Structures are given as structure tokens and as C-alpha cells.
Length: 305
Image (cartoon, rainbow, N blue to C red; front, side, top):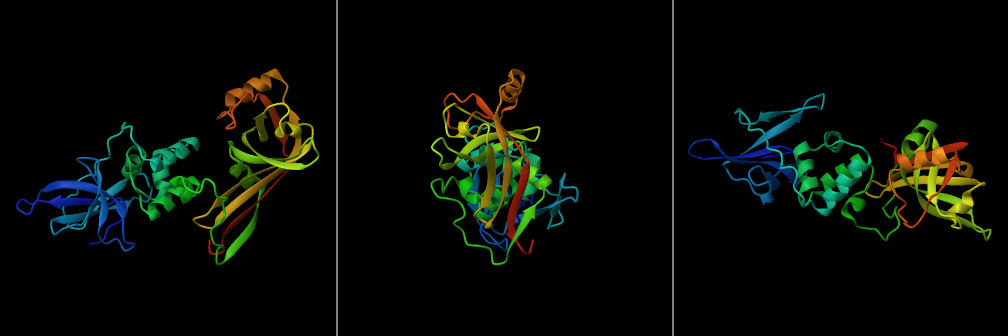
């Protein structure tokens, strides 16, 4: 018996041949798809470790080419029972599920798109976001790749460790990024680093919550802070992402003059479009804008990709 994530496990009555219980395979413990499996049972929405017996059958689910639907292809030739999606609206997700859901919503991604990118069933992603779950490493890697983050981040570990502690790729490839790809990676908002000359004349690099509005980078700060010193100077602004699980990453560097935003209409517009308050807290209503005159970036991937 071999299975894939998203396949349906059906236990049939040995006397009548009718299904007495079914569930979705949401976790594999062997790369070749052999038992045991983590099964999310349709009647209880609980996930348990299951060793199939002779009365269990696998109904394989295959993606259509469009990726919009799945068809059930039982390996026994019988009509498959449609897998039931976990109940929605429950309020006790696990930590991993909370992180996955929060990042997915932050990126404006639907569950359907997320499931497609991660190569998993929509019903399991729903279960993962709404119930405590312990996904396998392969599932976590798929989720991290779909979200552009790392397995460590989804697990909540390594918060006090610098990124990039993994081993280098065997055949790495470093390539320059074009302006359009750099803009796409900057996206609309996030956390980046602004490099400024502080009031004491020493250089400083400070992380800030930023927004990108009309190709202009803006961030909020407070008068007298290190980042407020960026106003009326040419500064460098950098964002990056490091995937420790895959030893890959990218960085984007923007350079240009910074200035304090003073126009009342512009200030109201910036406040309306802001995605989040500064993580540092406090009164930070001084907006600083950076007009990019140079935008460059680099990406490290495997030479095989």
C-alpha cells in the first residue's frame, strides 16, 4: 500500500463491503508512501496515527491540469467517497497553523492558492489553520516555500539566532535581479533596514516597518531618533529573505534621497494605506520617504534550478 498527501483512506466493513469510516491522509512517515499515515477522520476531524489493516483501501486524488478541482480515482475500481473538509469556524489552531494563516492573509493569498502552491489538499490546509496539527517536515517545507519563508520561522524557533546558519549549496548560483523583479520583491510592505549617518557621525543600520506607495519607500519614525536622521540625506534601504531550509535567499538594495513628508493630504493618504503600526510602538507619526534613484538586487539559488 502506497499513498500521497491528500489521498483518502477508506475502511470497509468486511461483511457488507460498505464504508464504515473514511479520512484524509495528511501526513506521511515514509518517503515511499508506505504506512503508517497521519489521518484526519471525517467523522471527528481528529488526526491520528493509523496503521492500515486488510479492510483499508486508498483512494488516490489526482489534480486536474487546471488545478481547480480534484477527481477521485479509487485503486479498487469502486466509486470513491468524497473526503469531508474539516469543520470551519473552530477556534483552537496550533501555533504552526496560526503562523501559516497569518502570513497567508498578510500576503493576500487565498486558501485555494496557498494549497495549490504548497501541493497539498485544501481540506488539510483548512484543518491545519483551524486545529492543532503536527505536519511532517515535507509538508512544512512545502508551506514555507509557498509563503516565501522558512521552516524555522513557521515552527517559531531560531528567534534569537541570525539567519543563514545552514550549509551552502553544493552548486550555488548568484545572479543579479532586474528592476521589475526587485520591485516585486519589495512588494507593498514589510520590514527592511535603513542605513543612515547618525547624529554622532557614525553609520547606523536600523530595521523599520516600511510601505511602498507609488514606487516610493516610506516609513514612520519619531523626531530625534536614529532613523529620523535619514531625512534630507541620501540613504540606502535594504530588504532580504534567507531560507535556511534550502540555503537560498535574495536581497534588494534601494538608494536615493530621503525627505520628511509634510503635506497634510499626503500624510492622510499614507496613514490610510498603512498596513501595520510600527512594531517598536510609541508615538511614531513622522513619515520619511525615500525616492529610489538606484534599485538593485541579487538572488542565490541552486545552479540546477
